[in-house]
Image (cartoon, rainbow, N blue to C red):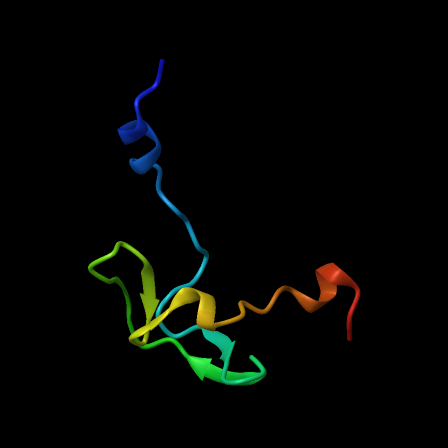
Length: 67
């Protein structure tokens, strides 16, 4: 039986690098340039001092058929 600590060792991989543009703001439509990526004391991923869930990662427009 696997212990609970086994699940905590999993990594979360996000394809965001410093210099990329993500969408943020109240309606998640304002382009924001990524200046820093880190983790806070709870272990959450933080971009520019705000949690990752406050941003939207734009997808590839050609891949999804949008122009």
